[in-house]
Amino acid sequence: MSGGAEEELQDTLVVTFSAQGGPVAQGQAEVRALRDASLKVDALYVCDPANAWYLQDPDFGWNGLAYYDHKIRSITQRYKHVFMWGGSMGGSAALLFACLADCVHAF
Image (cartoon, rainbow, N blue to C red; front, side, top):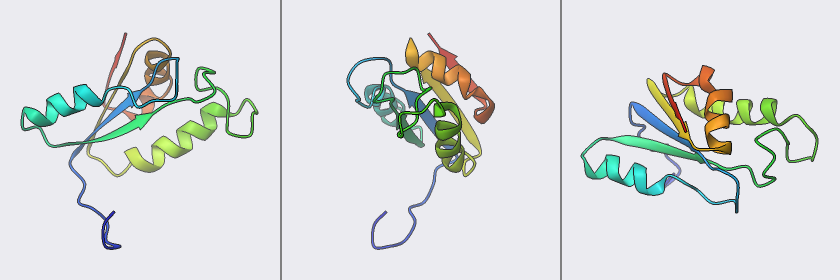
């Protein structure tokens, strides 16, 4: 956000889920390629710093599914189209939260 005003949203949101490893935003190059191809998309990068397959919440309890669902849903509901993808642990997360997407690619 800049200047206190909400930024204009694109119609499509790409949600990328990180695989195991350091808590980094995976999928940045792929989103950049979409934008370089003149596709207007917003991106949400989701990583699990606990490396617990998105099952652990920030309080170290096992309510991660509800925690991540709430966080992701609050963003995805603002878009007309939602595409989710991820590999390995990220692919499992994309499938876990597929009900929030129009299309999912897991590998």
